[in-house]
Amino acid sequence: MCGIVGYLGNSKASPILIDGLLKLEYRGYDSAGIATIEGNKITCLKHKGRVKELQNMEGINSLEGSIGIAHTRWATHGKPSSTNAHPHLDNSNTFSVVHNGIIENYNELKKFLNNAGYTFLSETDTEVIPNLIHYYYSKEDINTTNRFAKSVRRATQDLKGSYAIAVISSLEPDKIIVARKDSPLVIGVKDNEKYIASDIPAILEYTNNIYILDDGDLAELLPEKLTFYDKDFNVVSKTLKTITWDAKAADKNGYEHFMLKEIYEQPTAIRETIGTRLNEGKKCDFSDINISKDYLSKISRIYIVACGTAMHAGLAVKPIFERLIKIPVEVDVASEFRYREPLIDEHSLIICISQSGETADTIAALKNAKECGCKTIAVSNVIGSSITREADYTIYTHAGPEIAVASTKAYTSQITLLALLAIHFAEVLELNENRMIQDLKDEILELPSKVNIVLENVDLIKDFAKKIYKEKDLFFIGRGTDYAATMEASLKLKEISYIHSDSYQSGELKHGPIALIEDDVTVVGIITDRRLVDKSISNMQEVITRGAKTLLVTNQEIDNKLFPNVINIPKVHPLLSPVLSIIPLQLLAYYVSKEKGLDVDKPRNLAKSVTVE
Image 1: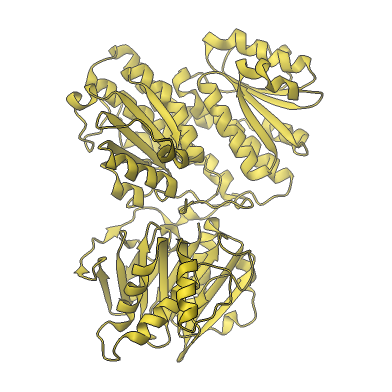
Image 2: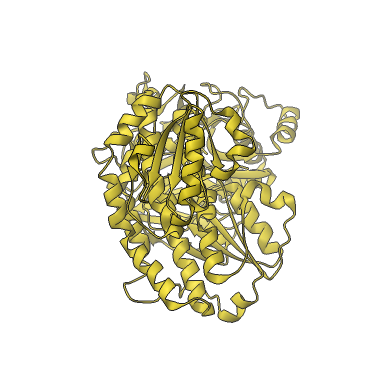
């Protein structure tokens, strides 16, 4: 939701903090701020708008302190403004805090602090935190060991909701205190330097040695020392992880936008995801998941739970699981899952998908499922993320860092990985004929090269984007797995071009939506299943008859005279077709947004990782 970065060491902090914010700006970008310890006081600079505006503020280059924290915001409480921007300070200006998450009881805490004589400048929930810390710090004996850390712990015990916080104080100017609950936070170390971030790419340029904080953890950072505490303030040890991502993966590498770069990284992302699970001619390897034939044979239903693009990946793989293992699959939006009181028990298997592993609604749904006795599998792209620590089992995509807010390579990697998991389950259950399973394996191994073919033919997509970028409404239609792909295509267009779009099952047009079709309305269709070609062509003809202009994505033998704009993609098994059919439509959304002159990577009102419910 918001980006946090911190630094403690021997170097000037401000350039490192600004660099981290620029790498985290996909997490939020309506305001930004920085606080450093300058001599015996905290200096705080904040600005409404993008990080570059903060970077150009008067006084930013005068900051000399070697300890500091910084933040880039996506508003949840209080409109974007310099006052509401982080960092926030207490009334005495001796404590400064940056925060990711939502404090649900901030009104109650605000009343308590008002009664204690504290006042507030902003409309945010965050401002209660530095004042609470000051309140408890003033209550501690002056000689108390770890007075600063204990004061932060006492404050966090009063907070209800989610938080990742970093705190500095002019009263103890050699330290940073950090704590987390339900929001991500990592600490990087290199010699006597310490780095803090809400996401790993922000600090990869400086170190790949990372500690990942668990819920309830608090850490005290000094140049020569790093101490971890659990929720009961007991000292605990943490495992240092070495991150193997290339730091340059978080750079654009010559592409105009991260989204375009990530679209073109899909062959590599899919290949890496396959490589962890499948070698040519061998069984799928999920030996890290202890799910036996006996357990699977007792499963009555599988639930796939996710949000947004990840939910669409779930819809795309639902027919693969049902076809291969003959177990009903339900795909749920995570934000609705708990509240509809699903009929789940120990005979249900829950698969939760989250690119970041920090999606609050998905984590909450997973926790709810565990309380009902279900086994849970997390699908994530981020090692050590919150969802991976909550689930019984975790399987990782290997897409590498995804920076653009609109997900692309994570989506196709998720479909690929889950298709392999479905094949693995079929092999465990010994349900399906070997020929079909082997055919699917062979096709999966060919996906990277087929994706490359799609990416080599983009001229028609660019031309079509120029024809439609001024439109107000678009429609996407498809049947079966093609409909799943149209849902994701519609979302991509909405996210980054701000054009209203809807997706419909092709056969449902006549049941209402066709009333919206008139002259020059654009309808995009996908046809990849040979069993549905005739019916799908008929549906496309229905909209052409009513004046629509059309774009067709297909790998079937269709007379091009029927449709003026056809994008041909390689043939693939219909169960895997969403991996290929989505790619030209990702590119269509990208080029439409570019034609409109919009910020492709940072669409309005959206953030990459939604860490609040």
